Image (cartoon, rainbow, N blue to C red; front, top):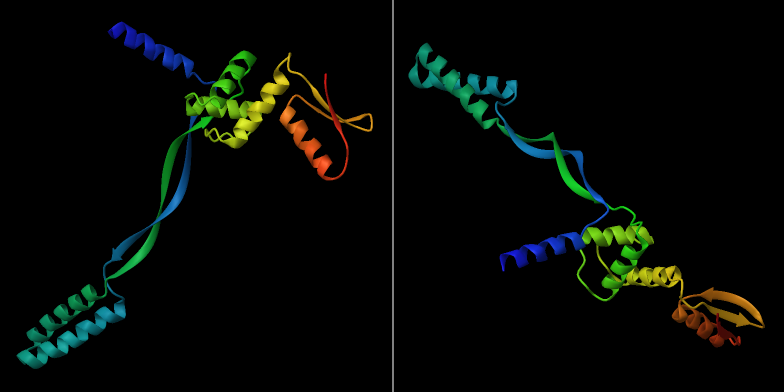
Length: 201
């Protein structure tokens, strides 16, 4: 049972192999932070000392009281003069970014495209490789645009795929392996009052 589980896990990892690679990318940003600055401005400290000295002299009637009052007044003015300022520091943040790569094995690419369009589970990295290869935005999400691009790629890459030609007045105006695309143009021409025919090569 254990051997079977290990074999299954190995197969899962192998089936999800991808061509791209992860790279570490770093950027530095200035981040704001708050800092409390001690000490008020000199005028405020001196003013507090003078007021404290006068009050100390009046209350104690002694010079020593004036000196003590001056010190206390200066300290109080200094403490009440604290303020909060905004400063900035540089912070470096690094993230691992997946860089997709082209899938060169055509059979592998076709197999994965069929799996994705049939709703089978495929790793995000593999999806990004596939998207990069067929020329759509490689975001790792298999949506309608990716499905449409996959259908066109599969239709054009198949050797045995039939070719549909849209003909107006005995002139081929459009050819594609996608019958739906040809039919859509034919309907638009019909709405515009233009007769056309579709031939299968």
